[in-house]
Image (cartoon, rainbow, N blue to C red; front, side, top):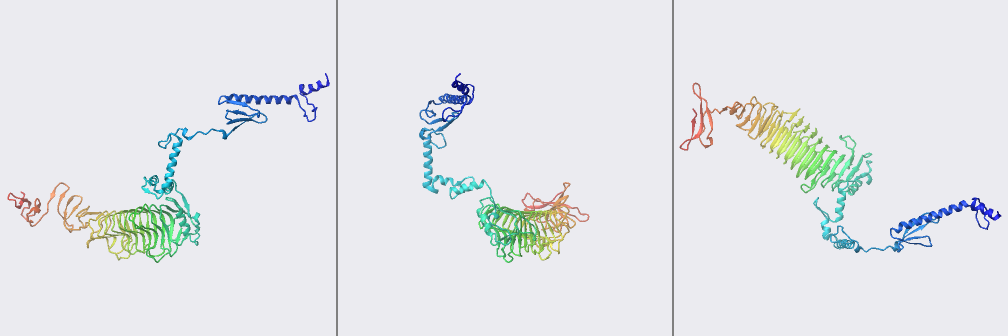
Length: 593
């Protein structure tokens, strides 16, 4: 074999490696060449397969000289192999795409009368143009401003959308985020005002527990429905206070709008000279404007003998729950016109005039409330010109005059109420209840202990139809007549001229007028004014006992049908008479044989 043949054999047949013969050549081998040929063949097969695939979805025009596989004759999509011919790169020529006119695309959406996309878009554009041109007076905008479910017409569409968004959420805004320090020195009024201004309807303005207390130099006005809520409620005069209002401030929180809730705070008013000072003042000149108020878990400290912890004017359908008002003339003072207020588990403490004052209100309840006011020379509960008021399980201790005073009221009930150490000043007219021109008043299960002085438990003047039942009162005065017939612990009930008592004799009955009708365990009948005996009655065995009379009254139409008994003396028979009309149309007393 020649040298040349041996060289080729070594290079290509045997797979050996020889140096390049010509300048610039690299050393090669048969193995390397075989690998390159196999790779090129595989890439070619990939292209052939791709051509087969794409030919089924639109056709392939050619594999051109730049190794580009072009799909569709419009040259919209191409496949470019990489230098190793192993992978294909897809590219889309956006400029060669053909657009489809909107009028050629069918439409079946919510735009009435549109069958093409173009018509739908044109209709929407016309509506928008009309709104832009007409502004708030546009018919569609005017209609959209009205919220039918809530009965509210908004000034513009944005306000309605904002209100709708607000109803979907309730944010908590902290006064600390608006700069409140709570260091006892800095005036935090502006921080509170800014937080309230930033709050939306129904949002919560949160008052975190301060390092010392929040000093406030102006009254805080709440004129939108929101919640002021803290987490620091103390119930004693010496406790740490959340908010302290400067001495120049006469009102702490002034609420002028509906749906406001104040909760979980201790409030102190330093003003001790103004008679109208109030920790919280619920006020609006429009009757019924202040609805759905909620005062809960509050301690209000008045630094003096003036003003009140909570004042209310024109308040309706609201709740005062677990609120304690310390000092001031009144704990709670609600006047003008209002309805449906519930005072629940609340307390007037050390007030100088009255724990609870209510005037001009209807349908209100006091439940588990108390007055503990050794400084109070007057009343625990003073209710004036109000109707439908109930006091349930309420108490009063150490009151100067009486547990309650009613003036020109109708339909007031006391159920399971208790007074302790009342009338310590011994200057009033009654120890438990002073009732003036008030009708339909009920006392059931009430009691009084530790009474000072000899005043009557109840004094009623110009008051009709009182009801007293199962009370342990010792003395009752009604229209200037005082009854001291022992304890009423067995119960007395009087409905106008009708009275019921378990034991009508033995000094345990109080007669308000002559010839009242009474019940006892055996009889129903008329009793003498002194309660000494029945005039006549129905007995429990079915018998009828007629009144005994010495001289028959005039026979007339008024006495027609009346039975009277004339008792005979010794050896003289009794006679039973009936007043009747005879055949001559004259009235006479006829003896029943």
